[in-house]
Image (tube, rainbow, N blue to C red):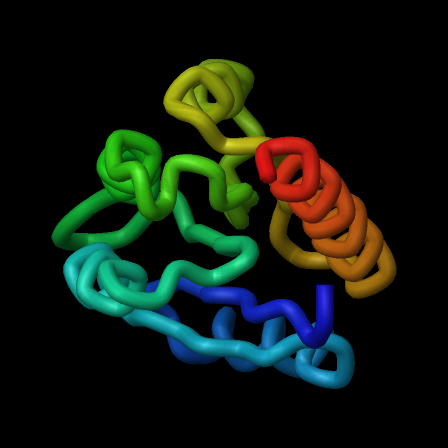
Length: 131
């Protein structure tokens, strides 16, 4: 997968900046500051992986994840939730709606890079098998 593209969805610009700084050397980065904006962005051009904040004002990350997993164009895109909420119920709900994993804030750059790389590798292998 040559220079994969990531979509960071977070209503807080500082969180987008932190994740971008950690990942920009290895990946192309797009970002959205709301669920609605993210949906519009992925319609015609789905990213290779989405880093998604759970707590957003207009549409939660859980709601957005459900919508993305229901669309054929984005159902196979890995979604990693980025959150400071470490309650088990939130984790169970996130995984049950289709997220692959969680990254907890404050982020640890080496773990973020490793998780993103692993899920992109998994997606690439799955895409090759499909086709």
